[in-house]
Length: 69
Image 1 (spheres, helix red, strand yellow):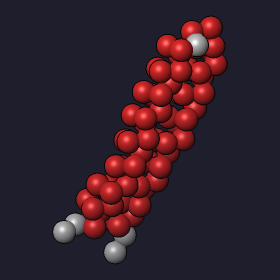
Image 2 (tube, helix red, strand yellow):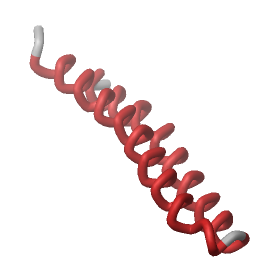
Image 3 (cartoon, helix red, strand yellow):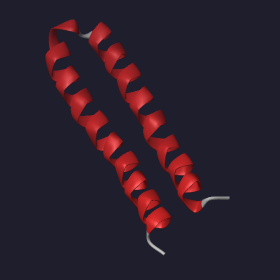
Image 4 (tube, helix red, strand yellow):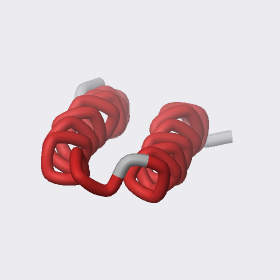
């Protein structure tokens, strides 16, 4: 098996699950407390950016494995 493909497969499962949970729970929080939806949305976007950074790190590692001998 190609190590870069394996790295991307494993390295993106966690962030994908995290982004789904963050989005779903933020929608639930906004539905329960609509007057704070602006603050919740800002916190959700920041949390999604941090979770997406983990996937970008996995991409960098995969590219290093693919192109560096």
